[in-house]
Amino acid sequence: MGEQQASNEVYIALQRQLYQEARLLSSEQYDDWLAMVSENIHYAMEMPQRRFREDKGHRVPDKTPIFNDDMAALMMRIGRFKTGFVWSENPINSIRHIVSNVEVFEAELAGQYKVYSVIEVHRSRLDAERKRLTAGREDIWQQTATGYQLIKRNAVLDDGVVLDSNINFFF
Amino acid sequence: MNPLDELVDFKTGRQKRIIYSDPGIYEQEQEKIFGRCWLFLTHECQIKEPGDFVRTFMGEDEVLVVRQKEGDIKAFLNTCTHRGNRLCKADHGNSKKFICNYHGWSFGFDGKLNGVPLEKDAYKDQLDKSKFGLVEVAQIASYKGLVFATFDETAPSLEDYLGEMKWYLDIWLDAMPEGTELIGTAMKVELPVNWKLPVENVSGDGYHLGWAHAGAMTVSSSMSVGGLEVGNTSADNSGAVSVAGMNGHAVLAALDGQSGYGFYPDPTSAVDYLEKNRQTVIDRLGEYRGKKMWGSQINMTVFPNLQMLPGLNWFRVYHPKGPGKFEMWTWAMVDKQMPDELKQTILNNVSRTFGPAGLFDNDDGDNLQAITEQSRGWRTKQMDVYTNMAIGGEHSRDEMPGVVSEGLVCEQNQRYVYRRWLEMMKAKDWSEVPSYNSLEEARATEQGNG
Image 1 (tube, rainbow over the protein chains, first blue to last red):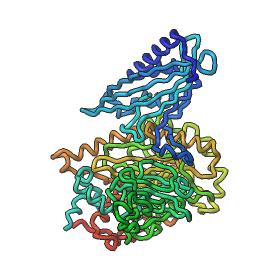
Image 2 (image 1 turned 90 degrees about the vertical axis):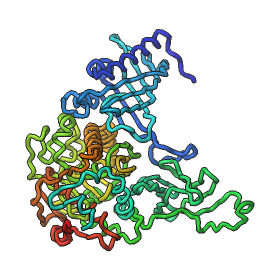
Image 3 (image 1 turned 60 degrees about the vertical axis):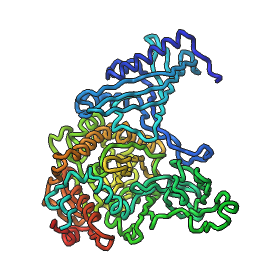
């Protein structure tokens, strides 16, 4: 693949980081999550459009942005949750972030790692309402004196049509 | 008395809940509303070159919209005329032909059937290919970049269908000399909601903003929008209008010339753009629209299923998928002449406010889903729901067309949307559909209940 695998030590540390991140996101511990996110974060997610394989001359992009956030935008989303006015999240809904298919490679800059993973989000809401969304993620994590920090996340949702009435959470 | 009259009472602002859940009513809507009205297909900017196509819907009918060799646009049912397979499975693209996956019938992008496998060996050259071309819509036309079609050949022209709504649409579509464009492709969400609920919401419901969106407003507001307050503690209706009575089309508009960018955390670049170009817009649209409306928070509804919010800059169409389900397609729409950086800012803000993960949009889905579900229970569905706020406030204004009421918090527009819905549902054909674009005409054509 041409990409240099990270050491086992780094692999284990970053896998541990992703599991911890998933737990923090599932339990809405957003301030703790932000502590592992860089000030210079670029947090993005796109959804796909369907194109014929042979159709290369796209005049419109084949992906559509859902998230394209810097730190200020992430803070705004989290600020909204904290207002107490987000009625759809009261009562509390159950949510699980399940991370798998973790691969870690050396990135271009020293101390940075490219991390691929698959994220599956389960949500249980009113009565029998249950939703499952999956996405592939491509992250850049930076080693710092205080631990690893997320500086870039590009997620691609697997659905061309979002099958939930809101995305009041992070991938 | 027509039994449909029971469903909607325009005078008192009342609807029967079953209009959001009854399968029989939904079936009639497919024929009488989506089978007859002009429906939005695409923006011309999305299909520029011959063979460029988009796949979309007119009601539950799937259509392919294709740019032709001579530059005109055609729209076909996306179905093979042989055994009925779906012809094209891509959302967008460029193709010189469409070949059916089932038996290989090949259609040109002009809709003609060009090739049939084994035409000689199996059909013995007896198939008249000229009779098996793709089925076209009855009428197709554009208004300032927006392409619409109807399945009804007796429908009025698109210009007449839009009527005085054109005066309002021009505040976006014709404000700047080069017009508008959609950025990229649609953000799509499927919601377990009756299609009329988002339409009525955006058509006139300024009431829910300060409450349903209190969380989003708290974190994103940078200026006053139409006198609304977080928590609905007060509402100053003096600087805004609700406009309807234009054959089902409706407008909510603040009149301050900048609040469209009120839900941008930093609206500086957008407001700079507005002030730099305001004189151009005044020259094109006149003082009133140029000064008071261009840049304001405005909700525009083109009956039955197209809505756009200049300022917040989203553009949206709803495709019904059964009585309790629809797909919502949202784009960012911008002036072509905007600087690229501002276009990117706007795209980000559309995703952030009204995309699938939008701060505002994520407040609406559950409410509208619950209303749909609360129109199903045996006892509950016998109940009514109401749009009876500010009845009697309707008036005319010299400076703008349509029926006007004061403020964004007012349910006039929803009453007129449901009035149009009832008129379309009751009419046997277009000759029975009344046409009105002013208070006088709206009153003269009002049909009594019973």
